[in-house]
Image 1 (tube, one colour):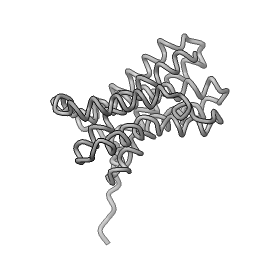
Image 2 (cartoon, rainbow, N blue to C red; image 1 turned 120 degrees about the horizontal axis):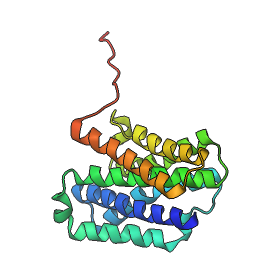
Image 3 (cartoon, rainbow, N blue to C red; image 1 turned 180 degrees about the vertical axis):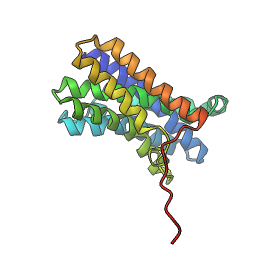
Image 4 (cartoon, helix red, strand yellow; image 1 turned 30 degrees about the horizontal axis):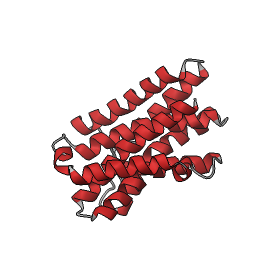
Length: 205
């Protein structure tokens, strides 16, 4: 279980760091700013998760691997951002990958610490969306979660899949893969086809 959590966390850290670094490059930040943004985007969700379940100090703070992975992704993106930009909607694609991986790892870790199904589902969602919120706030733009796209809903679906699999006694790894694929699929389709939640339409006074 610990190996699975670390693997999911580090993979999620890498792809979220790329999304953070890409936003930094687009906003013309210097190298230090890009690295700060890549680290914040890739670890904020996990840090919030660990603080809420009492796993202190957070693993992203005490385990040097997280900083190395985040900084490596930031450096690679800073150096070869032209290649990253050639991908279709690179920030959104890497963000979707990180969202899926962190939503799954968050739910798995919450269950491993004895949380109930509802709490584990919500914590998985929070783990997924935390990094994107931190990234967007640091560059003074409205977080994606508040822009009516299928973002938090996709993370919630992934976390709920993991919790349901745990409740049914299914193997962790296959369920985690299904949850991550479901989350990424929902988020990608939202990006590709403009799927959105309903938006409030206040009447003009």
